[in-house]
Image 1 (cartoon, rainbow, N blue to C red):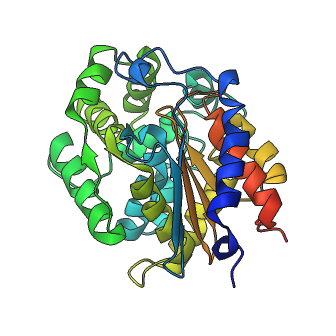
Image 2 (spheres, rainbow, N blue to C red):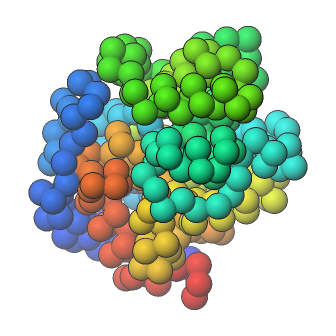
Length: 304
């Protein structure tokens, strides 16, 4: 029996309670008004195993925006549509030790985004999504994910209105520089696309089903592209903390400021968490504590 399959509800409950004690060290993001409404005490986890077994616990009815977690899947989408050679002409694969919204990093790299998991890389890839405008791109992308993973993601229009109301000056500056250096075509459509895909929302179950695509595939995805995405998640998915958690957890992971976190156990399944309290880097505190404890308990690290 696979390691994830052995997990019992009692064990899961104990790990969740342990992780929730760390939630008080996190802070719900205050830049986007709609996100500030999240209860910092919420915690949900859903695990999808390759065998078909699922196990979940906590506030699993909560709907939250994927925010930066979506970067993982826009990368996968474009790899499937255009291939690695083309995609990596647009963005690099190098980790960054600067914050995820750093303009300075982009300028130092002369407008070529360091990786797809930071904002400059994700904004560049938003410019490349198939579709005639931002809404069309978002619809086609969301439809592709739902059909492929069997999940029920949707665009949260209320969240999008809140994001538009308080548009990030850092993202505007990044998009402006990308346009100046000819890395994107239309600054306004690109930013609108980026904001829309970040507001694609769902529950922890939906996020776990997405993660399962990367863990196990479904016969429709290129194994090479899954390997590429998992590798970049491991080295870049938690921003400046990526290397630290590669050592402590040893799993590809991606976080979002909406409180979502997905961890991939290649060949076994995926772990999705929702905990809105973030650390100062922008990663969910309780979610990371849970995945770290689970990985150590079940010896899930890909490094053996």
